[in-house]
Amino acid sequence: MNDVLTVISKRQSIRNYADTPVKEEDLKAIAEAGIQAPNAMNKQGWHFSVVSSPALIQKMSDACQKGMAACPVPMLQEKAASPDFHAFFGAPAVIVVSISDDKFSFFDAGAATENICLAAKSLGYGTCVTASTEFMFAGDPGLKAELAIPEDYRFACAITLGSEADGPDDHVRTRNADVISYL
Image 1 (cartoon, rainbow, N blue to C red):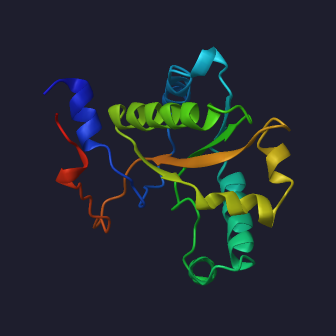
Image 2 (cartoon, helix red, strand yellow; image 1 turned 180 degrees about the vertical axis):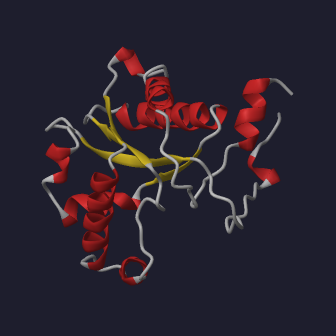
């Protein structure tokens, strides 16, 4: 199997991170992999906020917890009430992906997000794409400006990023064999 296919097959969502910071040059290479993604008409309707400040990541997690606790969905309220809640699983870096209101930006951001995740895996880091972290903006509306998200852009997802911690992996990856039809 070639290197690209190997990285694709080994990439999975990681929810348990070591305290080790992500090297600055690796963070830059990983984020820049996002802008190498194809995008409709080269509009590049995405923005990446690369966060490696532990204090800011904790502030984002606290705001997410507050926003989830106030939402009407019982499952999310229960999750927010957990004593070990951390919206970003203790990751040392988070990339917040935001998008313009262009018709194709969400698809473009998906391609960029996968590039980021694959680049991270190729450099030995784990990632997890999260969407419920959008509750951080309900918990602290000022975070949008603090994360340098353009005013007319909206949250798409957040990507946790860091070295995988030792320990059991509680996430079992499954694939349905019947989702591909060869005709």
